[in-house]
Length: 156
Image 1: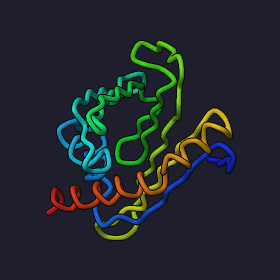
Image 2: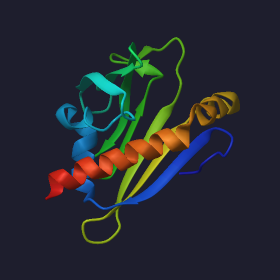
Image 3: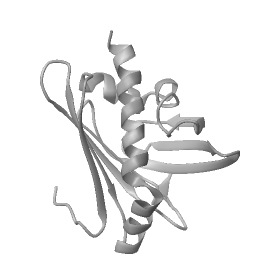
């Protein structure tokens, strides 16, 4: 994958949990709700249909405000890669104001460890800069810490 420094934000971490467990955390609503947004914010609704064209719908509560985020999966390779976007919702209905496409990869990094890469791909340099200013690296970094802690509890 060729990254564009103007439109792509990237976070890579080595996580102390097997990639199969991380993938399960990303693809199972009852797991995703525990770590997907930085605390104290929370996920109030999650509907996942993990297949190309299937829905990736979440709703967050941030400081009392509900924030729906509906999208679809573009690519699904079990335990290796997930790609989803908010450019479309279920049924390939175009979104009026898409924000990004997420590209997640899970690679073995030794026994029980995973090299996790998350790319947030934006349609413009301005959109990527807006996401950077919103705190992409801190927010997504916090979420990865929460994911690792949750996944390690499952992997025991």
